[in-house]
Structures are given as structure tokens and as C-alpha cells.
Image 1 (cartoon, rainbow, N blue to C red):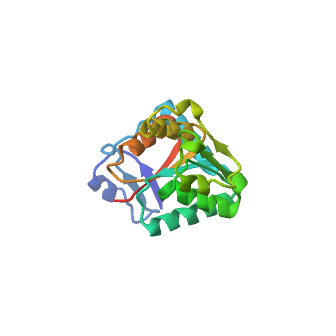
Image 2 (tube, helix red, strand yellow):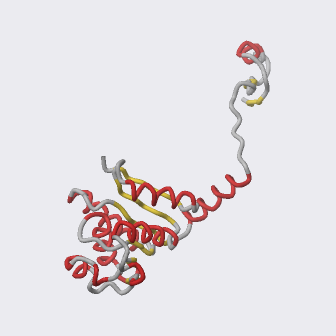
Amino acid sequence: MTIYSKGGTMNDIFNSIDDDKQPSIMVPMGDLDTAEHSPDTIDELAMELATIKQPAKRIAIIGSRNLAITHQQMIETLTTALVRQGNTIITSGGSCGTNAAAIRGAMKSNPDKLKVILPQTIGQQPSDVQDQLIGVPNIVEHSDRAMMTLADASRVCNREIIDDCNQLICFLSHTSKTLHRAVEYAEENHKVVTVFYLD
């Protein structure tokens, strides 16, 4: 059976079948929506596909601090698996939640594949965060942000993390304004973005 693409009605399709010959179907195409792709859209898709196919990527994992223990365990397991596949994980400090789980997962697999970018300095982090960072070989501090509020420094930090990655994985709720801005920034900069909503 051969299928042709041609304008027509459903009656035209059925009338075109001849019992004495190999049947063919005429498919009407006039009513179908046509998808127009600009060159920019095609280039973006090609870039994203190339990123996904890379054997080793730089993957940023950021997200909410308010996570159930089961979600933290999932993030930890995911991060461990990503590092074992050869990926580098980029995250920020955190005593609990997404970032802490990502740090634990990467440290289990290969500490050299973990990069932690802090919003300010290690000394400005709570003591439990400082304890968690012991043994992390690649920590970036920012003494230039010491006088900023933690919220402002965190926003800048998220952008720095995203600038340094090929792909962003973000765990957030629908009310997480700072994280929503981070996701928008990643999309604007043509990163591959995966978002998990927790609510």
C-alpha cells in the first residue's frame, strides 16, 4: 500500500482505491496545521540535542531546602548515578534540602566531579554547612559578596552556577520565586532544563 499526500476530502480517499490494483490512499493535507521553524529555533534544538548526547556533561543541581527525606534520598541517588556516568555536578552549599543531597551523592561517587559555588564565603555559612564541605576539593567562595544579603547573593550564585553548566536540574515548588527566576535564566541562555515540582 502506498500513501500519498494530496489535498482532498474523505470521499476522495475512499474513491481512489481501485480493487483491481494495489490500493493507494490519498491523505488530505489542506487542513493540517503547518509548523514553521525559524532558523534560530532549529539552531537551539540542535544545540540542546548535542548537549544531551554528550557523554560527560556539567550538570547543575539546585533547588528547595524544604524537602522530605524521601526526596533528598532520590536526589542523592540521582546525583551519585550522574557522577558515575562521568558527569560533573555543580551546586551550592546547603545544610539540608536539594544542594546538600547533591553534595552527598557526588561525594559518594567521586569528589573530584563535584564543584560547589557558595553565595558568599565558607565563614559565612552555618557550621553544619561548613562541616558538610569538609573534603570537597573544589569550592568557589565569594568574599566580594560578603556585604550582600543572603537572598541577593544566592540569586547571583544561581546565575553563576547556571553559566557554568550545560544542563540544569531544579527541584522547586510553584511558589519558589528565586528558583523560578533561575529556571527562566537557564532557558534564556539555552541550557537543557529539567524541572521537578514538589507541590
